[in-house]
Length: 590
Image (cartoon, rainbow, N blue to C red; front, side, top):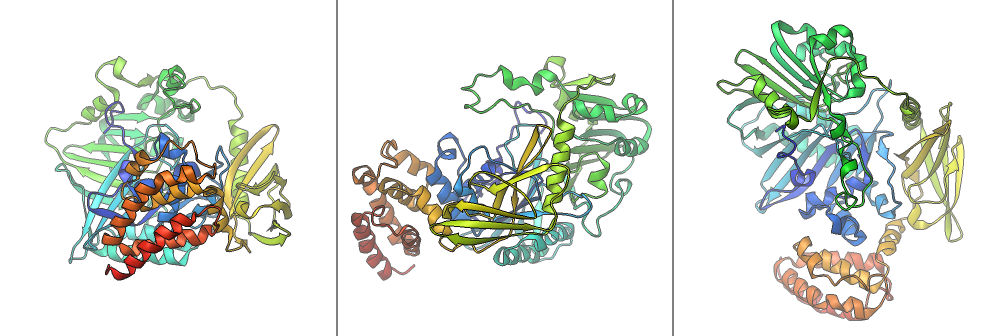
């Protein structure tokens, strides 16, 4: 559980359906969101594939993943915390109806990190998976924790899930898509008969804690008990919250705190001496600098640090682990919306030291952390100004804002209206894949926008004194033509070869196998039929299987053909092939 060298988890594997099941609907929550990371989620949920090096850069694969999943997942995030992507890509606009921002009043934050996924088998029997994480949906490489529970439908009702149901119900008003809102409500109703099983002999019970939701605003003292041994892992802390834990200690209690080096200055001398305080060794934090560019797959070097949130306490033969999103801070337990999963652990002879041994190792050379006995020296940086710029973006997200689209010849004009632009910095704004950024005012006009660049996602940059922070925000935009999605498809499926490759992915039962069966891609984008017709054997075999087993899937081909609707892209030979198989499909009973 706590040995990173051996126990690393793959985010995609956590989401992938179990054997003989497929994803029906998935709801995720996160504080920070990276759209480039989010594009990979449908690969795991609906295609059971990872976003590996080959597929992560293949727009055709990403397009099929999003098309396949558009109506079947929703992700909630903190307003103003969508990371601006490194590369502009019109495909991100296909995520508009799956991403929903939560803007809470009084600078409160929406900070929970969970996935609730409903899978179904061929008999339409549901299987639920609840994944509780400390990790945001980003490419950050800091150390995190995750726990999965799976539950099945039973006739008997259970009250165990009521806190989870209340948490999911809290998110419903922020989902601005009626179909998805109804799907989430149906999951909430079904949870009354879903019985989760920890599937571990030593986990004897569990509880859900949706902190900050109405009815679950208890002080930490009501959530945590007195203890003889305590381990707190939290990247961010506040002095007051650490003091609360200090006061819960029984006589001769052991107290261990693992946090980031930059947070230790928030403690008092008394707390630093009362706790065994650890921070990650600098050689581990900066460890990627010693790797070659090939090992990093040409990514930029990133620092890594602790990001997990774990509260483990023991008292005699009672042991509890709290895992989830809540930092050891006052804001986490007094204002934010958070989610913690509490596990009751019972094992004869268990001692907290066993957990510490797994975390630290038995020898210093194995230990990625070091004991901190004096306050570290901190250097001045621009982080304080960057934090303030993020707060101004957060304020911006809480203003009444709307956008309207009008046509100007073959291009479009976007007019953005906002009640008030926060003062203190300059804001620039543009559509996520649109033209150059424009200064944001109470009324902002953006001209020369192409059809495929229209989006409800906007890139906002807040700047002051040479420091800038960019984020993606979502603005309700009225007047986006219905043809926009067709333009997005045509932007990617822009040649006969690309069309044939897309058809191969669309009809394949195995994405990886389809990838291996593709030509080397040298003809991609060339628009030559000679290159595209290399897919004929793959398509013929795939259509034959579909007509005999799932004839209703022929409608998917028809829908894509209508989206493209360009004889220069859809070969006549393919239309003829489709027509022959479509006639057969009509005679086959599904």
